[in-house]
Length: 151
Length: 150
Image 1 (cartoon, each protein chain N blue to C red):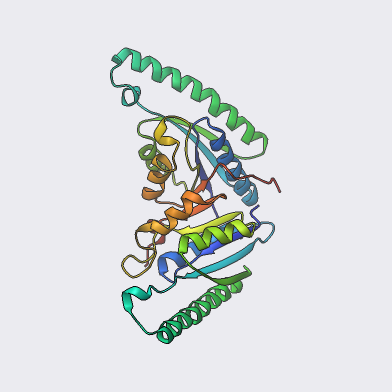
Image 2 (image 1 turned 180 degrees about the vertical axis):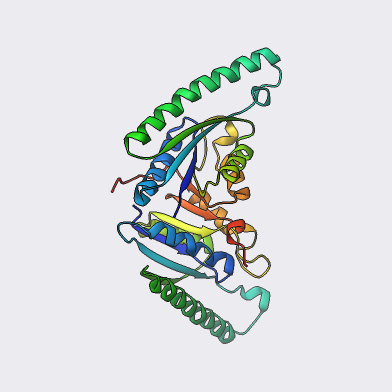
């Protein structure tokens, strides 16, 4: 049985669809805990030309927005009777996700096939395939075409 | 919960370790339909230049062997309380899996990212990734670290 499911969330509709699948599995088992994680990338890796203090401001803002977003989702899960936690981490998303999974004994990762930002993320690949390639635990990939039945 | 789970297998221990996770997904309130599939690829005649009837024999043998393998695997699952059906598909592996999933209301695919490298036809995970890229339902990929052969 899966005791702890990790759902990386980036604010996209698809990550909510991934979460819905995690909820489906968690409700099936009863005692499963869901951790949702949002990874804030170093702003300089997206725009290397900005100054350090601007980068820091942007990152702090990203953390603030992410906190609110994760809290809202944790609240929704709690209302469903699911034990949940929202984590914000900084760094390279696939690496951070993998590290977190290993460190905290996650036994399933559920995520969308692609994310929200940047051209490279429009295609299947980058984050999802990088996580899958290096994952110590099974990864469930959820494509946009999925519909979730609550039954 | 998921109602119809498709489990492609290639006969390697790596592919079979996904069975543990199939069990994980069905230990619930209602049993889903579990379908084990093995895809027999067409033999490339050009490479081997074998007579027509030899090719037909090999093809037939592949089917018998894979059917037997699926039957035994299904029996193992059944012994653990998970009823599974099985079937042999034909053609390109990824295409056959996608085609079957699309036409039969499969709502979850569980497969290993790697077969037995060098021996298996799933070497390097290319099969799993071409399925993952195109499949329209959730797919659970199980990578070798979780599939280590003792």
